[in-house]
Length: 414
Picture 1 (cartoon, rainbow, N blue to C red):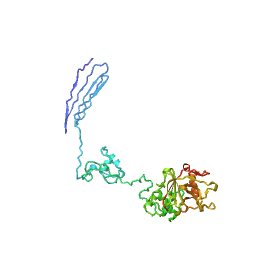
Picture 2 (picture 1 turned 90 degrees about the vertical axis):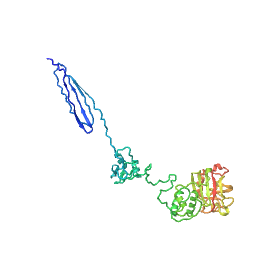
Picture 3 (picture 1 turned 90 degrees about the horizontal axis):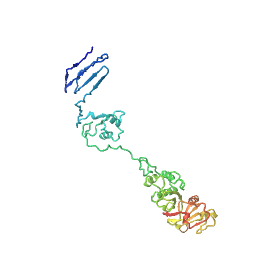
Picture 4 (picture 1 turned 60 degrees about the vertical axis):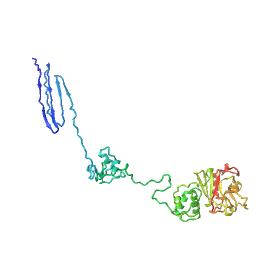
């Protein structure tokens, strides 16, 4: 027996309920059709969802078609709500604190962490620092209130109107480093050593390995200390003087700030290898070019009646190694009966200006004592000859200025 179910319709009446914002209606229709089948019939249950109440209008449509072998379900999503929610924050009011913009700094807080926790990308660390007058963003104080609403023209902590802020937060106060162009300057606040003993120690430092004997650091000034003070003045372009250096004076400050002895500015550096003899100090500087000060020797120039003549870049023209007499040349102008350096003999002389010479002697006081030449200690004369490359020379050199290669300047008065 074949049973044909022509149609069955169930119409559910609509239900409605009122809300504060209007009426919402829910409708639903279900249709089920069975066709003949040779398989046992399958009964499907159709469930009608109860109506819902919402502040928006929702339509749900569901159609189900069934056979004995398959089920197809099509669902249409509800449309988006037609109304939106808008939140308005009340504008700050001048004259009263705004608690919503005040944060109290807790122990362990950092300004960066506070701003991060606010979660507002429009608020920056620099802006909050500027708003609160914070000079160093790494320094905040536990318990202090913080205005975290920058740029609104109001001090949210007190409610007072703000003046327009500066474009940048105030820079933290720092102590500037020493000027890199003056490396000899000591750090600010560190007192420089002062006094005769400090000067003696500094002179030993500056003249070390240059040819001057180290001074005894005892705080007592004598002729050797004053000779080296004079030499330091010449090198530092301070007027030459054999006077003591007053503790705390500007020239003492210049001395104590110097770490490397410079080439005297009056040295004939353009000539290559040079010697500068200062008669005020009774000192000879020797160097090569403008930046290579090699020796600083004590010297003794001519007595007043045999004054050593000033020179301006005179070339040495003769060298006498005096190999036949152990390096000692008897002066033809001041002959002596024997090779006694105390009586005018010269050790390995270097001649300039028509016969005056730089030569070795066994007596080199700190005052003028020669007959017009510039005396050096024998060991110092050997050091000078070897530096000039003449240590192995066995015979005299005449008029070969290029071979000797030394230019002499003499200045000052004792």
